[in-house]
Image (cartoon, rainbow, N blue to C red; front, side, top):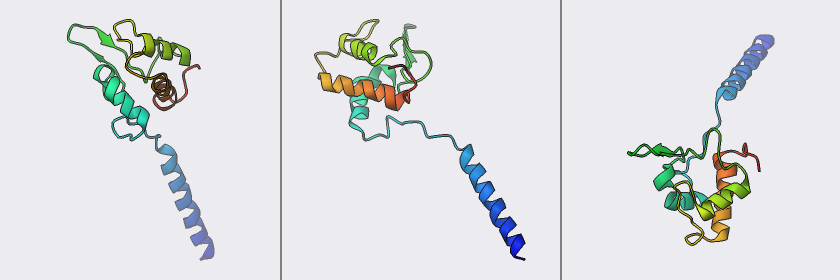
Length: 121
């Protein structure tokens, strides 16, 4: 009787472990986040890059890049900082709208929260 109970406990524990292993990590939600960086993104970047930074295609065919997934033209912290500060390729410069600290915080947000540190720094 004790061995049957032990087997049941082991099988239940294994089932629980497999069920937990199948779950994918939750994707960072900009819309749900209360972080200051997410707020900065919603206020300054979401209008073009979309509410979850996945980019979009405008009515005239121009593509606004996805800054979360895939290959990125601006991959290093320095490149991202420069692009946010100085704009270019259709993006407006934010150097006179955001402080250096806010821009650095957006760089960290993109690299660590949106890209999960996969991009080269």
